[in-house]
Length: 148
Image 1 (cartoon, rainbow, N blue to C red):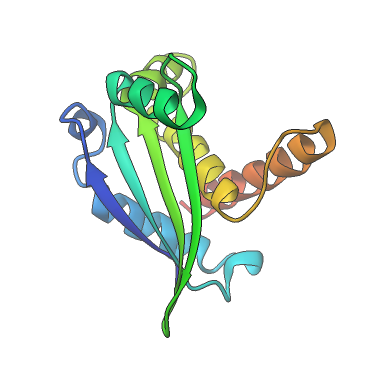
Image 2 (cartoon, one colour):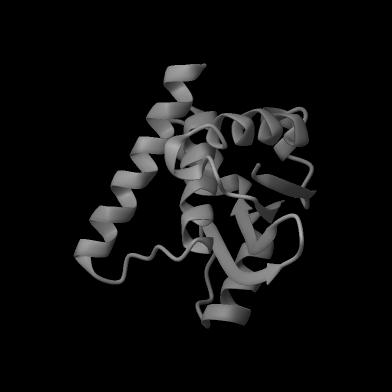
């Protein structure tokens, strides 16, 4: 089973996701049944934050003085039951702004899935890697929305 530890770092998130823990429990239960993720026993943390905090994190770790949508911090810590794969931070304002064109939940799912795939070792430095990662993101999104 895949498990997420949710850290609410900004109150605006509750306007769109009343109970983030429950939201992720349902999403990860679905993801854990997907063929590629069926045997995964991963744990990770998600910080739901704002642009100000994202700017600080982006500058501290990437030397870019601007907010960003999602940041991933991979780490592998194995214990008897699971592997802790790292941390993800997501900006509320960026997700909210993008959702004007689509849907808040779809944009949010895109971001945490993107971050989670980074924790698993995917990247997009080369175009071929970008294409592979994007295909995996879309596959997971379709799987969620087909089952809901």
